[in-house]
Image (tube, rainbow, N blue to C red; front, side):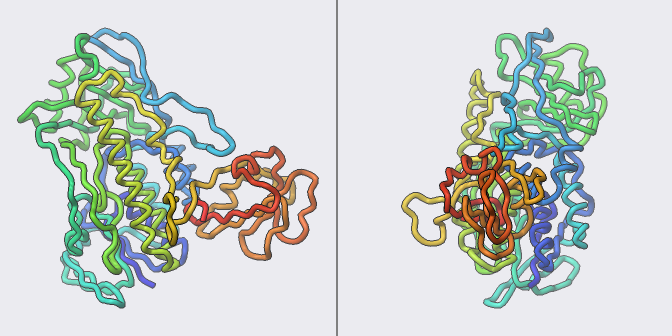
Length: 457
């Protein structure tokens, strides 16, 4: 099988890894001549960290990034206190990574590219898809170089202006608000503490202001501020926005920047024949809530194992489009609060963490009758060493857990036993602390099957 992934951002890279580690011949192409260098999607949500754990990149992500930090609030240039977007949570046996992690998007992409290269796959830059045709047996891709090539499947992870989406005629309904403009960019500010975020605003309107949040490992901050009509994304514009609320804070360097407008869109379909859409090609979100990159990574995580096995392909759209619709609602609601100057506009709840995603449809019959995220739990293996359920799940396979009874003689099947119980035949792990039985509300004899993407089948 050969699969073409169009787009070398986080979504395309995740999908490339998912396919390559299953032995699928995958080609990842991108029209850009250089890799993106900037922060853009710099918030990694807890569920995405679990995905990265499975992909084998979590250690690198955690080493390069940092947890969210408080914002130091300055009103009329005077420090008045600190606030947080979310309150830190302690890890639990079922949720080992309960807090968002901060890492610039270009750094995340670099880590994912390195992992993809371990499977012998390199992102092909300056390789622009200009058209495609498909039939019942495959997809023919045409490139700007004049090359044509044949694939079993093609996935468009090529962003909001997706060439793939347009080529297969999928509508992208939604709204774009040209009247609301936000400047986002990477800046250097030597006079600010790089271990904290900073919020500058007027005392009579403390919600509307300018934020600078640190970008780990770069010495820079991500700058966010509302823009007036006619302003551009220059360093001078950033400095002028900051000068309205602060005195003496100077910006000395300027990296990636963009003027963002509320753009909320959801593709009508995620699949046409042998062609699929993922990430921003299928949905674009307001940046409020930090969901865009995370939703795209999880699209790829859902699609990868299904494509590799050529199974349950129709469930990809059913499962992931519903998630994107929900995420669009959450991020739009947060944006509305910000636009209206609501006092709690900075606060974030757990609705964006991705830990409560379900693919179970009420009263559904057929292919969508699946479960929820499979929790983690500490265990002991047959040699008494500590392991986790996530250790058992890690990899491209299904995992079967049989609670309190012998497991069948099959790969990746385990009996989960109470201390002192005899395993009988087959692999087993001991739930010494009772967390696995509790997390799965399991009674002796219960069996659960966990999909490769960490959801109960």
